[in-house]
Image 1 (tube, rainbow, N blue to C red):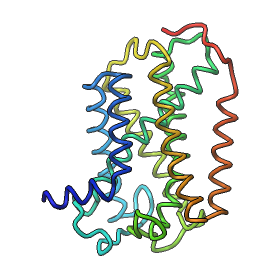
Image 2: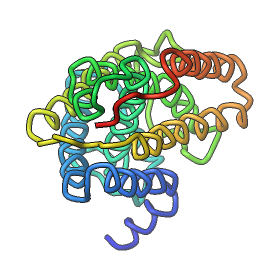
Image 3: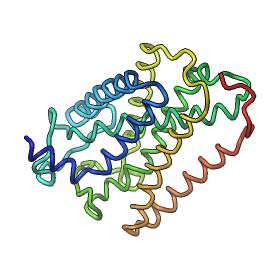
Image 4: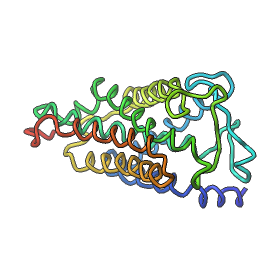
Length: 249
């Protein structure tokens, strides 16, 4: 068991780097207790969604892990433990990016109100899905970098070999995580200022540029150009609205 844990930590180091960043940013934003709650809730929802999809094709469509390429790793009902962990920091970062955008579009509204609004929840789920649009196609080419060829879609996919149902599933799962957390967590007066939101945006961009860099590194140029275009789309969204908020709480 210890050998498997060390194997995962060494070979999936990037997941744990982003996970630690999420724990730090989340603790600054909400406090440690709420961050651990988000981590647990997000993990359980993500794990259940993956366990369901590899068996019944919902919500991502059918896909299969290549277990022979993941020797010495730790699985829970057929799902790698590190994979479901990634949903937590991706969904959190999508929520923070959505809050950043909406804070610019609604400069008079308190951040704590914007954070819990359904508009931010839905936008956060969409932005999480958009991040996966960049991640999954390059992850599917894992045999060309240090991820390894760990999964595939038996029926193939139309977006750089990834199924569109996968992205729909990501939106649904992110929306579920955010909705459950919002309905069960008191977030009054959190956050008071944009500082912690900026850190969440930094986490989102860190994941984006890491995967974009891998895409260029493996010379998957058509995919890299499209993923760059998604980044430009985000930049345009970020330029909309006011540069200065008139109310922080």
